[in-house]
Image: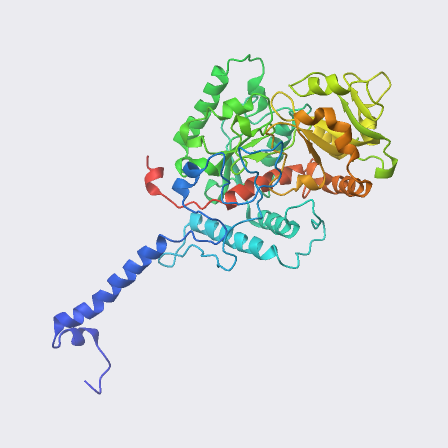
Length: 490
């Protein structure tokens, strides 16, 4: 055989046939075993603490933060929960991300999605201590952000790959329609923007990172405290989608999100079928005492848009604001009556009014004020927060258990004030104790973060629409989804 080429058949026909066959087969068994063990550990990205999808939400409770370690804004001594700070993690910084591996030279669409997300996590982690990323439009800077570089990198990664599938089922006005010119206007504005968006919206559910359930605020009109019909509408809608779409049954929980600003939306969202109990809820009324979970849910601003464009943005400089603090409004909720009782018409520096006199502009008063009081209402949210930001007035939160908008990115304590209800009698003393230089810095920061609360049609980069999407994107980044055929076949 020395003068011939090696031949498999001749080799097998020689001596020690059984031994040669074993030598060929055993390595394949060893490689198969190693591959199966490796697959069990695909989720060790180094970006999150726990990556087991089946147990992530079962382990979550009001004292834990989903894959994150430090709180952002501890509002009103918020001890029930920690507020999400997306860029402060307790992971091993030296660990490298382990990307999902291709099987047999091929990769499923789901694998590709997870590979992209793992790469995004690695880029965000690297950006936290890096030199920053160039951007001709806007580069976040300053203490208004928990980590401006990480936020910017995350935002760019979102622009590069984030895809949202919006269900087409449902008839207006209960679905695909919501108010656009009221205090619930963000429902309609977001719904319209996402359904008209060709960049983030995908019509292919297989390439979607998240799925949007377009339930509008009109479903609440004309109802009393009986939530039965509304809950049935929501339940029937979700059940119909789950039955129609195979992918609707794949990891239903955190890949779906709803958005609502109506006072009654929280009770309805909690009535969803069991698989959707842990879906992402994007809510104006973000109150932890009523089930809002900052690590899973998203707090977004309530914006009262009575006109098609925002014409009242801007105000006087810090040095020209002559009123210490301002509030005008009725006795809505438990906090406003306390404010009026202690301060109505009792101090020229503290302009606390139930009704504005004729000829006095509400927004002009805000433009002249250093601080604007933002007491929470019955359900927690208040459009005064955004109105204060629009007019360059430093917001003063008076709330119990409310989570400010976009707390996953924004460091609210750097440009706002927090006062507990019990400290309302000491309101003037607290505000006067803030040094002038510190107030000037806070006021400038309010102006700088204003772009994140602006509403545009069509949306502009870093505006409120994109900030809402970014908050949903962050929750999706903290989730690894494994394809489970048994779920899809149920």
